[in-house]
Length: 112
Length: 116
View 1 (cartoon, rainbow over the protein chains, first blue to last red):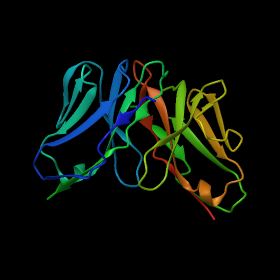
View 2 (cartoon, chains in turn brown, red):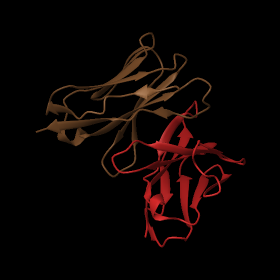
View 3 (tube, chains in turn purple, brown):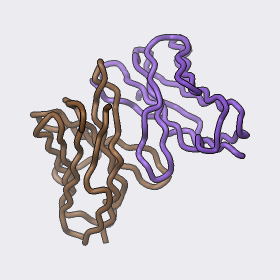
View 4 (cartoon, each protein chain N blue to C red):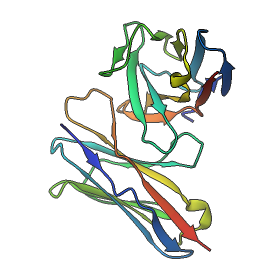
């Protein structure tokens, strides 16, 4: 069964630090990768997506993709208490149409 | 851009009634929409994939006769929970596919259903 795995956390970091969130996936044919943020009681919101190996930066967020090792990560620089949320990794697997497979999410806590 | 709305945001109903939830893509057309359910402190669970003009594809274990999905236009999909029971109480979230590849999912704000 194809899977997307995330450490459930909580991952606790001090304010101003870099938070590093990791995700591994099992389908080697996966082509598209997404990071979503979900605040408690709210629906997920898209942070960014990445298709190619390497880094992609957007403001304080950097997504890193390594297809050979089958992992994707999200770095949050200068973490703020408002970044405290659950971060969901999603993967478009091969032969899945437009369906995304979501990981269980990592809960991030940024302490002031 | 890529805004998805859901209505209603909250529903409280009696056991045995049916509830319809609407999902709209406001500024783009979505060939594919998705319906998820999320119980407290649990992961998103995909219920079904809805394609405009065709029957929805339901995930294993999801009763298609209980959760009726209609995707009549490129901007509207509806989920009807028929004969709702307390165990159907959950957070229902839709998403719509957008972007150049159509695979980036944008989520609606969700509908919280409480069945008494």
